[in-house]
Length: 474
Image (cartoon, rainbow, N blue to C red; front, side, top):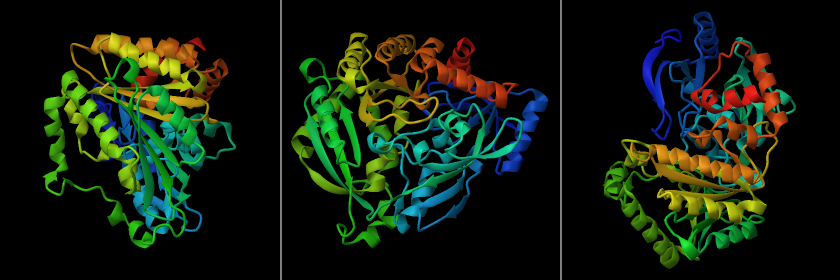
């Protein structure tokens, strides 16, 4: 198939709850990207950009549009073993990067909970990881991006240019990212030292994250989303530290890719590809209440105080540990709703969010707490505070009530000066987008849109739903 032969396909968000029919092109070179944009301008098609499709909601969907799926730009162009700087086409995945650099003593500076995202998508969404409190978002570690503007012009952007700070985190609405130059970080072992600490309340978990943020390299908390009252927020925190030179006597072996690969079988017997089917009988509120209770009990009795060494891949990529685990949420799929709340309001607002979920009869099946810091990008989700990511099943019966719950949560968060993350969003309304960003940020973004894309060529479903109306009112 050439770049000028679009194919009809159903395009959905990673959570399978939103999406629609589109025409899809899969370019494999910058020239084909330019040709696709020229074709779209000629035929008056609107264009949605997509990498690996890992955004939970509609950030990479283009219902009724031309979708440019950029995973075909998948070449690693250059890697400097002395500096850790890697130059890649935009379709190169996080998996490709870490497998390429780790044997030489480097690791990507920021990774998501899955290794599947492309670097172009990671830059466009400005992803964060379990070290967001210490190193910020991936954009802070990008030395340059190569972009193709809607006009077809190719341009290189570096961090000293204002447009760079708008394109990173600009969710693919200003330019097509076709190349990324990333600064990796030095590691001296293929292992991390991990400590597990059970906490009985949300306040205790927040206190622990604040205490550990000065010495830990990575922090992440799991909450039992079904716990109520005095037990609300109980859970487990994982604290990870990089090993220093000499601490791993077998570093040459642990730095090899073979030592990092996630096992394909549970207990060495059961194929992990079957596990989501075994989880299926528990895919309802009662079942997940039991699963969450059992996980907390295990955390308290078996994991609390435990210290062990774990490979980088096993620690970071939990979402890849059980292949296709999201199929448990079929047929309606899931959404993840992630709130970012300033530190001074976090205890009150995060508790209120969980209590509201219970009051509406929609407890989260999975809840994850992280510590964050601000970053310098134009439409950033980063705050000096905490994020709470909540996974909800979507059904025909609960969909309307679930969206209503999310709107209520959004008001709690923006009233407290908080924000949301476009890579996780499926529900934001334009009024919320207007409130969560400074007015000058929205007007600057709108100005860039008018200058770079006067025809309005680039537009995902997220943009049409939540951002375009907000910009019009800016």
